[in-house]
Length: 200
Image 1 (cartoon, rainbow, N blue to C red):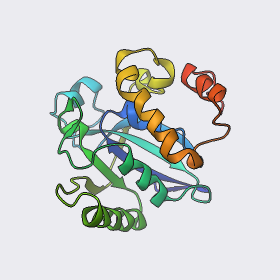
Image 2: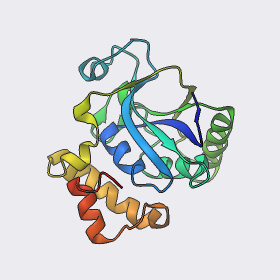
Image 3: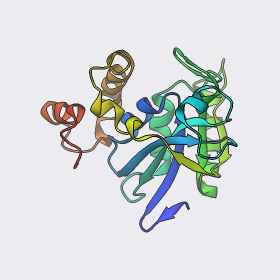
Image 4: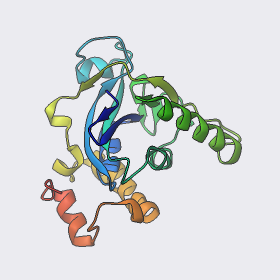
C-alpha cells in the first residue's frame, strides 16, 4: 500500500541497506525506515540467500514519510546524492545484483518523478556515464532480520560503519543540513550515533 493515513511509502535500493537506512532515518519528515529485500522472486528470503545472488532481490529500505514535511522529489535528490547510480550492481566494494541502485515505486507520481529526475541527471550531471538505477513497481517487501535494523546506530564502531557510513553521514550533514531532523547539534549527533536518540 502506498499511502498510510497521512504518510506515504517509498522503497529505495542504494547498495548496502545499512548505509541507506542511516541516510534516510535522519531526514525530517521521515517517520520510519525499515531495511529489507525486494525486487526479486523468492518468498521470505534470508540475508544469506539474497547475498548469494540467487533470489533476484536487492537490499532496500522501506521509507515511510510525511509528504507535508518532505516530498518524494526531495527524497530522490538525497538518494541520488548519497550513492553512485551509474555503477551497475555495485556500490564501492559491495558487488552483486543485491547492491543494485533501484527505486521501487508505490504510486504513479513516484514513477513519473523518478523518470524525470533521472532524465535530468543524464542531461546535466552524468553525461558520460548514464544512470543505471532500476525503476520498477514494488510488488512485495520483506523486512530484514532484526540484527540489520538500526545497524549504524547499534554498531558505530564496526569497521564497515567507520570506513563507509561515518564519512557518508558527514557528507549528508554538509550538503543537506537543512533537511535533517532537529536538533542536529554535535551533541545530538553523538546521541544518535550512540543509539540513545531512538525516540527521536
